[in-house]
Image (cartoon, rainbow, N blue to C red):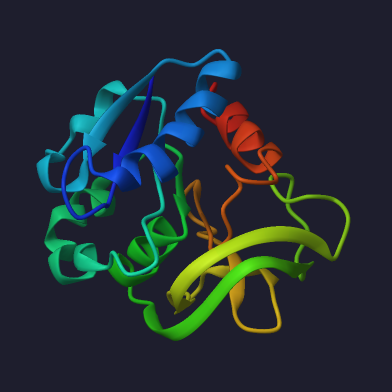
Length: 186
């Protein structure tokens, strides 16, 4: 089972339809079951019964989760693969010592792979859909995998199977989610 964490302003908001449900369709298409979880109700060690976690994106101005990062403290003990998409990448970076700064990108953007990884498209640059008002500086020691002219687009933790992307692979580039799910199988 894959846990889909919604960092939106409230459980089941319109953002769930826009950012969680498209990811859920990809997860189902790949043969996985999934469970919806709003970030504010995620319990410590709830992840122990899952094979992976995807922290989904939010609407452009929906950044309330950044004021409640304590709800993501469970990530420090998490031992299964985690993919952070947009807001999810911001959460991963902040929890592990990175930072965010203003950096707005909306629409299709060229993304250049700087360190090839199996979960990123092989062609570089590739087109990706952006919808974010903040960009990330990764935690110390995390590898930068891709960037746009505006910001870092993909990172990974070299010690754990944690990945973050600023772009929205559920809009275009669902292969990113598919490859992540393959890492959740074993």
